[in-house]
Image (cartoon, rainbow, N blue to C red; front, top):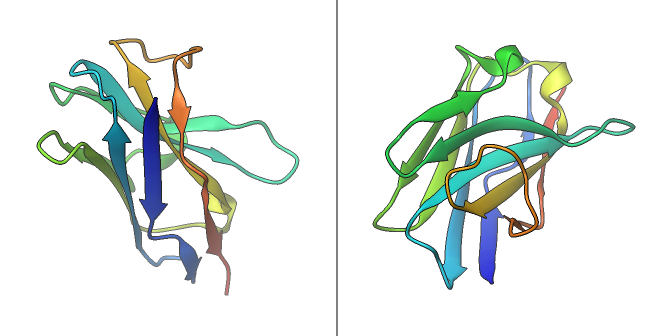
Amino acid sequence: HVQLVESGGGLVQPGGSLRLSCAASGTIESINVMGWYRQAPGKQRELVAAINGVGTTKVVDSVKGRFTISRDNTKNSVALQMNSLKPEDTAVYYCNFRPGWAWSPGRSDSWGQGTQVTVSS
C-alpha cells in the first residue's frame, strides 16, 4: 500500500498561481503513474494531469497551457504547478498513485487525502 501526503492548496485570486506537491511512501512499484485529480462540489472527480516514469504526460484540455505536472523519481514525488488560475479551477485536488502504465483509474490506485484549492476574488 502506498501513502500519499499532499501540500500546497489554498485560496488565490483569479490569475494567480499555486503549486501542489505530493510525496509517496510505502511499497512503491518502480513502474507507476502519478497524477492529480480534482472534484468540485456536485461534480464527478476528474483527471487534471498525470505523468508516468519516463515523463510522458496526460493533461485535461481545460488546463493545458496553464498547469504543468512534474515528478521526481528519486523522491517518489509529483508536483502540479498551476498558473493563470480561474474560479472554475476551484475544487478539492487529490494526488493519485497507480502501479503500472495505465492512464485510467484502477483497483490498485492509492489516493491522497485531498487539498482544497479555491480561486476567488
